[in-house]
Structure formats: C-alpha cells, structure tokens
Length: 548
Image 1 (cartoon, rainbow, N blue to C red):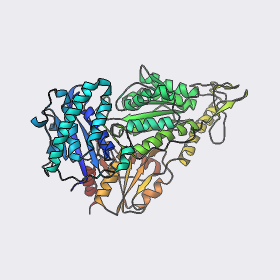
Image 2: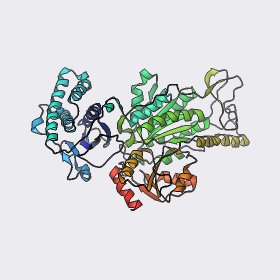
Image 3: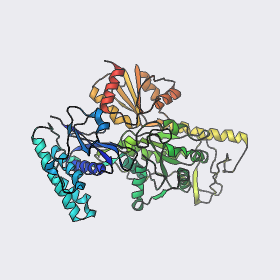
Image 4: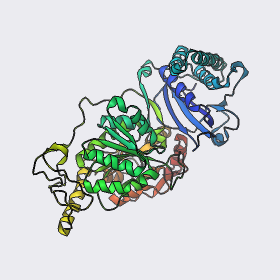
C-alpha cells in the first residue's frame, strides 16, 4: 500500500490546468492531506505542452519527483514531452462516457472530482470549495461545477475500490488549518515582515509573482506599488524610496537586472540600501524565459562597475524564503548596502502546506537617525558605517552624489580622500561576514562525503539523501552565498570528498568557494536543461559519484 501519490496534469496553455491545480490542491489540503505542487510551462499564452506535478502524502513534502502514478492529459497529443516519466505503473485517466458533461468547459472540474475520489478527499469539502471558488460567477455556474465534480468523485471512489490504486494515504486533521503558499508569496510575506512599503518592477518571468502578490495587497498594507516603464526606472525608484526613508524592493529576472546594473553602482556609491528580488531563469538573452536555472549567481555577485560590498541570500525552502526576505531588509538597512534575494522559477512556482509562519511582534528596526545641523552623511567612522539620515527628518542636509564625495556628500577629486572612501565602503564587507548566516548541515559533521548545495535544490537534495539512507554522506546547504560564513572552510576540510550540486553549467558556487577559501571542489553534479533536478535523478547521480 502506497502512502503517497504523484499526479501530473498536462495540456495546452489556456486549457485550465491552473484551475484544476488550484482547486485540487486546496481541496486535498482542506481534507487533511500534505500537498506539494510545482509546474513547468512553455513561453506562450495559448497552445504548447504544459504540466503541473502534484504530490499527495501522509507526510510533509517539499521536492519534485519524476515518478508519475496518475497522469491526466487534457486533450490529445499532450503527453509526448512526458514520455520519459511514464512507466508501466503509470495510470492514465482520460475522459470517460460515465462522466461526460454537456458542456466541455466542466471537464476539468470532473477530473478534479475523479482524483478527489481516488484519494479519498472529503466530498463536502470539494463541494463547498467549488461554491466559494466560483461564487463570483453565479449560482448556475456553481451548480454545474458541483454536478461535474460529483460525477467524477463517484467514478473516483469506484476506481479506488476496484483495487487499481493500492493507496493508503491517511489524512491528518491538523493539516486542514495549515497555510499553503507559493515561493512567490513566501518572498512577498518575508518582505512585508521586513517592513517593505515600496515596490517597483517591470514585469518579467519568473519574478512577476512576487510583484503581483505585493501589488494586489498594496492598498490594505499601505504599500506603494509602481509598475515602471522599464527596469532602469524601477531600480532608481527603489533607490529614491530608500533615500526618502522607505523600505523598498525591486523585482526582476536576469535580463531585466542587466539594465539595472548602473543603478546598482549608484546604490553602492550613495551607500543607500536597496533590496533586489532576482528570479533566475536560463539565459543568455531571452534564453528559456519560463524555465529554471541557478545561472545568475555571478551576475548578482559581480554586477555594477567599481567595487562595493553587497549581500546575497538564496532561499532553499518556503520557510527560508520568508525568513531570508525579512532578513534582506534588515541587512540592507543596517549596513547601507544592496542585498539580493536569489530565487528561480522552480522555487517561486512551487507551493506546499506549512504549519504556520511566525510573524514578528515588534515592527522592524529602522536604522536612520534624526539629523543635526552639522550632520555629515558620509562621516568617516572606524567600522565604515556612517549615520544615515533622510531628508526632512532633522535639521541636517542629506546630500547624495553619484561622484566620489567628501564626508558631507559634495563632489571631490581629492585622491587621498578617494582612497579612504573606497576603504570605508569595503570595510562593510567585514561587518557582513561577521553576521553571515551559518550553513545548515544535515548528517554527520565528519562524514566521508559532503554534498554542497545552495538555493532551491535544498528540498530535493535532502529527500534524495534520505532515500539513499547512507550515513557516510552529509549535506551542507548555504542559505547565504555571499559573503560566506567563516565556518565554511572548517566544514569543507572535515570531509574526504566534496561534491557540489548546482543548476548551472559551470558550478558558479563551487567556483566562488574556491575563490574565497582556496578549496577547489572538482566533483560536481550539474544540470542546465531548464528543468530542476528530480529526487530520483539525484539519487542516481549521487550513487554514480559516491560509489558504494
């Protein structure tokens, strides 16, 4: 008997796959089942072949698998790109005359009913959820959808009792009251906890979900939301907002961030905080605009002309996405530097249920001061941090200049002073290193083999190692990839072998580790075809690398 089920729905863009996904996952969660879902889709509004993967289980899930237990193709010729994932054990559900509906528009909801019945979801929950989901469309639409779902549900119950699906997924009543959010929403929630009250963006997949979430809730949460005319305007708006005392974030992807690099240098020279939510996707140029990759670490690390410090966070789970996004605002404000939240399509488009999210009881600390008449914005201090003022809060002049400047903020070409100010700005890197987040170690501290990962691979690597069940392999996950915590070298030196796992072609994080620590990680498991690793794929590839 299986206590987990992997369901894949596939079809054209515009066929309503998202509706099926939204309704089914919520009904299952409200029925007490743990749910994980993610999607892959082509760059088109209509047509193509898209799919969504949903895992249902008696235990918590947070990773993508190749295995397909039930496949629901919405239309013909929609399964070709899934052929490698289909096995003799895959059950394919197609439209049946027993649940044929008068109007084809309700076929998708009938499929929701079938799957709900097979799994054993609460029928009343299904009916009630449809009532709320379609409430804006009137009683007739609600009735027709409930009717189609009911037909499907009865067929699903019959299929389950026939023995074709050997399932025993036990619901947990506690799950019903849990929350279910996506990676995009998690980043947005973390930003809110960090005090974000201004967001600007030019929409670009996969970052748009973060911007949309905050924009949709802007009115009730007192956020200024601005869809800029381009990315150059977006970054400069965010910098200006911080200068005026707001806490601002800009969302973008690699191609959009390319246009923001001059603004990033401006933030470096002004010593103005700014938070950038950078959703990575395959490049160069437009690349694969709706796929996933960890290819922009170098972009975030080295972007902008000149030398100035920054911090880069890379959440590996929804819980981390909330916490690191909150932390990004505090880090930017405290150290007066740009801070990146590096995510990717896989992370922002995945979602699962969580017990709760801890909301801080106290508002975030603001680090600017009330200025006096003799205020100097860039006062030279021992640690490199000058007191930051904002215009209108106090009597002092808060100067800002993109040229090299003196302590008051006025342009200078004093070369000795220039040297001192470069050193002042770079001194902040030492402060950032002191507060860098420790990596999370899963497994024994002195294991024979150490897997190193970062970002969204966290849950996949963790489940793969659990499936392997080997005590000689541990996993070190870095939620902060720059600057690295001081403990990095100690962790790496304890292992006899180190293997880096990354979704890019070179191993950008492994190269960064070598540059900063001198430790070369030659063994790497890399993927760069636009798809995330699956649990099964990593089990196989780690076995190949690690041996018996």
